Image 1 (cartoon, rainbow, N blue to C red):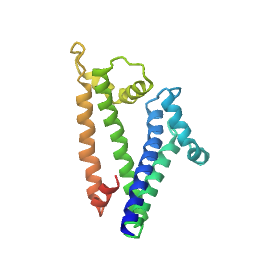
Image 2: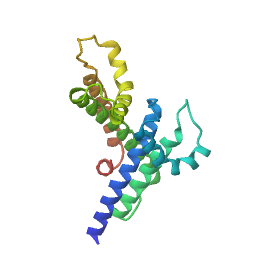
Image 3: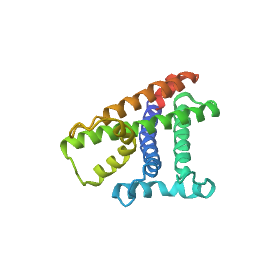
Length: 196
């Protein structure tokens, strides 16, 4: 029975985390004003549309952003955590604490999206500079808002772009100072780390 629960948790976390990533990517793509004619964007839109359509009727947009995709990401994270706790410990725990954990988990994933997009962007700049692949264009569109503030202050070094280094540092500092401190303030941070 324990083996079945472990397998169920593994499948739940793998598939649930994948869908959570897709939902949060939809919010990020709107945030960075990505080209929604990109085939990858079209896939993300089609994958999230069935659950977002009813939410849009009750959750208004804010500052031109579709807040329903952010709310859906929090709800998916909440359901994942509750089901994982239920399968692992036989209880879902405190709903308020689950909600706080969900906010922390979504924020951590939000930062990871930018972190890994920056890594991919740096690798692509070495391997395939100026690529017009839909994936490469999407990664560059995601990275540009994170890099633009640093590019304004850093001098031009003749083709060497140091802005990703400073963006990595900023993301890591936010993760260390904000996410880790919020996780430490919750009652059971080890469970939170297991679920994120």
